[in-house]
Image (cartoon, rainbow, N blue to C red; front, side):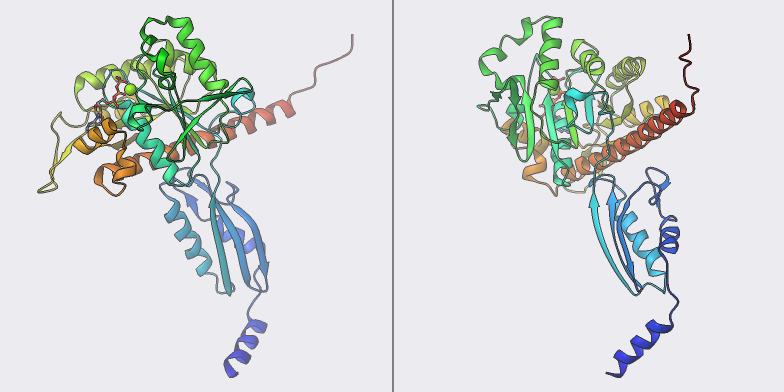
Length: 386
Ligand SMILES: Nc1ncnc2c1ncn2[C@@H]1O[C@H](COP(=O)(O)OP(=O)(O)OP(=O)(O)O)[C@@H](O)[C@H]1O
Ligand SMILES: [Mg+2]
């Protein structure tokens, strides 16, 4: 009873806090990826302040951001420093930013980010990385699609245990298949045609990819991962030229031969003005099951060299692991069968870094669009007199 009264008295005499002060305090919290404060990034929503009782939603830029916990902790810390705030109710959500201009792409405006997975050389693990990254992103709560753009040799259906999978056509649109919560499109679902793929020529191959991209009924997706065939042929070129994409993720192995050809792929995408999201090194090292030491069997630092040479982010290293290979062969990806294993953890780390980079690209895009709008507004109107 006495305590209750004392609380009331304290509340009567404690200084009142205003919304401006709360926002000022929150603007000291900086998103480490975007290097901007969370207030100007519009991450604070539905703020209510009533007699020292504070409530708001923190809307993060992606559920997979590597700094989500850090940002939330910083928010709680700065609000905790405000003695005037008596109760604090924080709701944390995430809304993935658009890493591509949806206005420019009405055909695929339900897909916020498109990530092409490319390499210079074949067999470095693009399909393995694409699939496990898609699953890792999906496990954070993001809505994810996976497009197997390797029309010559589609491997995703097998890796997902969907040998007999198929896609239906409704209203002239392909309906993606579903597996482990992700939407999947692959030429491999057209079973009887698959063995003929090698004889298709460039324009037909490009046409098939275009259809897979724009004539598919993708539901709202945060990320669409596009698994490309190796090199700089028709398919990677078509992807880069058909629709605006968020960027390209380059996969390489540590050997010089793989990283040297990866450089060619990077060169092509840069020439086409497609952003490079970063580089992931696959089969990077072997973790000894007995001593847990890392052994760099194929050499060390191939992807890091590329990242320094081109000034592009290094986004992760995936160990060489027989579980990854057998999981793929059996149609049971490691992200599903052993989500806590070191290999799955490596995929999760890479996925978070990739999501972080997509947010950075999205934020740059927003700035560019805002400055274009300002330039348009301030440009003198064209004279209509004759
Ligand atoms: N980290 C890894 N550890 C062990 N095996 C791996 C790893 N990554 C990929 N593999 C295996 O290496 C082989 C090639 O992988 P994958 O098919 O993903 O490569 P790719 O780059 O997509 O090939 P392609 O250029 O033919 O499309 C597969 O057998 C796969 O299971
Ligand atoms: Mg492949």
